[in-house]
Length: 121
Image 1 (tube, helix red, strand yellow):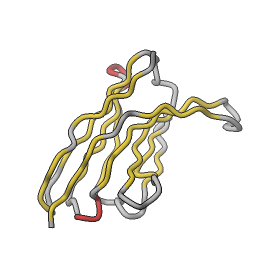
Image 2 (tube, helix red, strand yellow):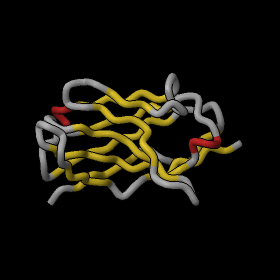
Image 3 (cartoon, one colour):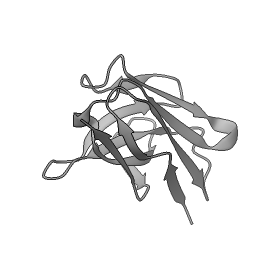
Image 4 (spheres, helix red, strand yellow):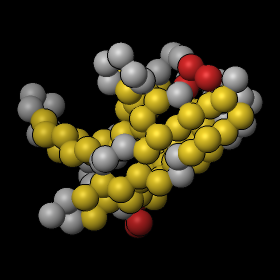
């Protein structure tokens, strides 16, 4: 079975850094987009950063210049380096891997269970 397991979350002071890791198992996602979403209480889940297999990225405006997404295909793992953290970054962060056709007309998302990131003010 496919599993996406996040790690690296926790409590950090404003201005600090965390690096999230997402290790996938059960399926090779080296040819698929992987990324990170987050959900704060009372808000909808939102895209943070996505990295395609070809290296293109989508980064949320709210984290541009502070967060960096990367991946290690040999380890089937995607990372999110978070610097200059702000209290508004507090959320549950979810790892995502997307299977899609070449025309991008359909897709299926796999999700991790999420990891809590709390930034103190």
